Length: 105
Image (cartoon, rainbow, N blue to C red; front, top):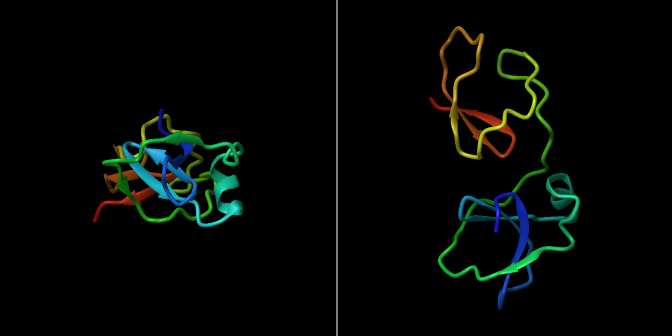
């Protein structure tokens, strides 16, 4: 299953998850699920044996600005990638995590 799809586990409890990089992230509500995937009501059924479970997702809000208030489009890097923002004079490194930049302290 490609990353970013909504899935449910064969033989599981019926919960719907977002699958990314071998990790299942639970959608705690339909509103949150719809913010991530407009097709969340039609999840793919997968064997979840051996997969990890991440923290439940929060509502996805498309990024509009970097930490330096520069507009950022879809940055085109996989979830979990370490990035450094062009024009950020602090040379800070961030992790691209579910559409948000998370600062590495």
